Amino acid sequence: MDTSGIVKEDPFSFWKNLILVTFFFTVTPIALGTSLFSLISLNNLSGKEVESVTSREVSLYPKSGARVFASLPTNLPSVGGEATATDARPELVRHYLVYWNSPLEPYSVFIVEAADRYELDYRLTTAIAQQESNLCKIIPPGSNNCWGWGIHSAGTLGFDSFEEGIETVSAGLRKEYLDKGFRTVEEIMSKYTPLSNGSWATGVTKFMSEME
Image (cartoon, rainbow, N blue to C red; front, top):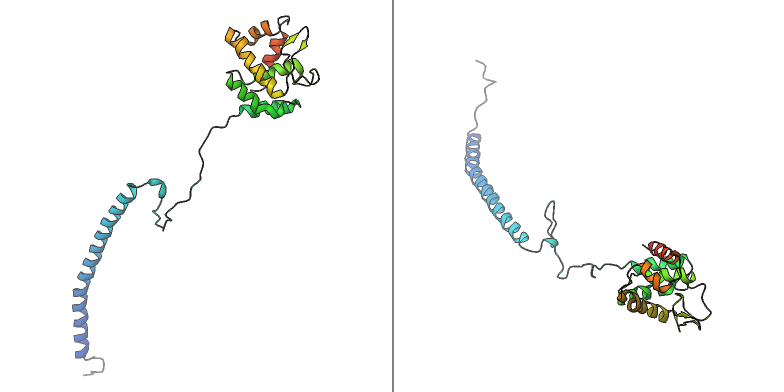
C-alpha cells in the first residue's frame, strides 16, 4: 500500500482549531450584544438632542438638511437697524424740479414737510408754482414768490426766502381754501384766479399728475 498521499493529523492543529471555534462562539455574541446596546443608546440620545434643539430659538440652527454642531460665540453677529418705510414723495418732487431746472430743487423735502403740516396734497404747491411762474423762473426780482400769492393792485407779495414762501402758501391754502370748503383744484381756482377760463385748473391738475 502506498501511504505517501496520507497526511497524518497534527495534534497541535486540532487543539488550535478547537480554541478558535470556542473563541468565535464566545466572543461573537458578546460583540453583537454590545453593538446592539450602543445603537439603542445612541438612538435615545439623538431623540433627546432633537428635543433640546427644537425647544430653543430655531433661528440659531440650520432649518433643513443635516444638523450641524459648532462652537458658537456668546454674542452672535447680526445685522443691526430697524426696517423702516422710505418716504418717496420728496424724491418725486425733487426729480420733477430737477427736470425743469427749478431753483426750488433744494427745498423738495421742505415742500413735503409743509404739506404734511397743513394736510395738503404734497404735489399741490409745486404744481401751482409751475402754473404761476414756470417753477420760479418767471417772478418779480427778489420776491421769492413762485405762486402768484398775494397779488393786488399795489404789487405782488414778496417773501424773504423760498422757505418763507412755501410755508406761507401752504398755510394759506389750508386756512383760506381747504378749511373754507374749497376742496378740488377747480374750486380752488374759482377763488385763487377767478378770471381763469379753466386753464389754471387744467394746468395744475396736469402738473400734479406728472409727480405721481
